Image 1 (tube, rainbow, N blue to C red):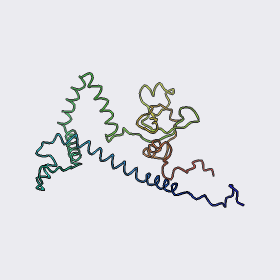
Image 2: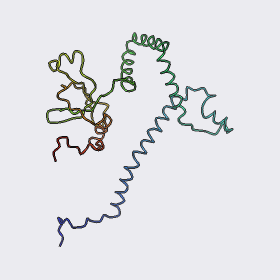
Image 3: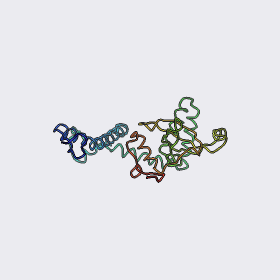
Image 4: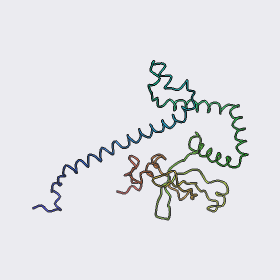
Length: 238
């Protein structure tokens, strides 16, 4: 007689509803990322089109141009999604090319000088500009590496991102002048919010995983580990 603890006992057979539920959840896991990605891209493209296309003269609207080329009746509505994105990309490239020239830099400096003399606009513009340069500009202003620090107390570890070596007055007055690192400690599941910590360099453990892999780990609340790094044993113990 088999007991419930007998390892040779065959697993209980699941009913039809249980199998259908399992298949449904498996299909949902497959479909949800693809569907949400397509929906997000489609929505962003539509939002950009809705902002850019109204600025285009009526005679050059994409739907009217296609109606003329295809000889369609003007009452036929054509939804040409994505043209606004192309126009926006071309316009942005042209502005960037002009901004790198002498005339463009002079105009930007003149406009920024006017903004700096406007009390409220000055604060808004400087904040948005700093965020834009940090996110989009191709410079050294990016997270260097992912790391581990003990937070909020010893014995509890958290993933952080190394911004820079601490400089200025904070470096001179903190940690008795010993080297410190500026660490951004993200929150889960929204890594765009978090804390800025100044941690002694000796207390920071730099990780081999990339910043993108560490961000995925934070966003997934520890469910998604980098491939091949979830079973490593740095100590070499069995």
